Length: 252
Image 1: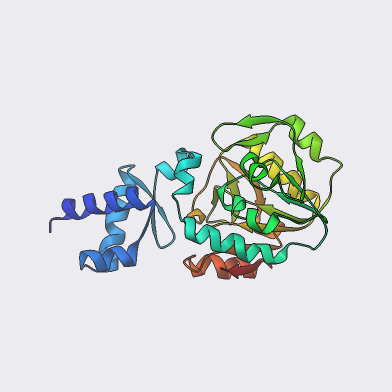
Image 2 (image 1 turned 120 degrees about the vertical axis):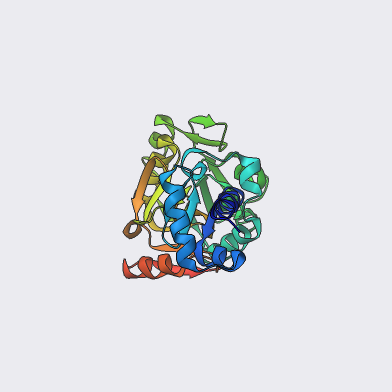
């Protein structure tokens, strides 16, 4: 196989999956991992992809915000397991914050029929799924972002100002190599920051595809999260570094 043919396959795999593991690609191409790494260097210089620890990520991951239907098709089984595992940390009573996003929406079954629980959320789809149960639900005010179906903006943060939670369940668009929690939209990031600040405990729910991605707005560092719940396919390097920062990692 010619080098350019190999590189075209690497680009195609990266764009299809969003992320490429260099060792896995080397096995599929029957070449040395170092050969793939050199190919990735060439492709990064061409502006086709971006190198990250262990492989590469498609540039679209840094510029494209997935719609709700697109997010629903990204690792749905992993997201379900993550939410089921995170639900173990729900208090029996009191207030919890639940952030917007498809991963946190998977908490819905565990949040239904809990009369001693108050769920404060900006997640419209979550409200639709639990609002008719015995659980008390407070929908945060604000402007609805069509891409995420979450309320954001000054009215949302003002609504949160005097609210306090036992636990905040937070989602993210990406976790950077430097362990920064990032979101595509600044207004959404501000809401996440306020939820974290006003909660006794903060739990980040992210599947393996989020690691190594950096989006425009940061809302916290690893040390700001008490716990990260992710799936078993998460790169062990991120798990070890999060633990080193004092953040507990729970694999679902």
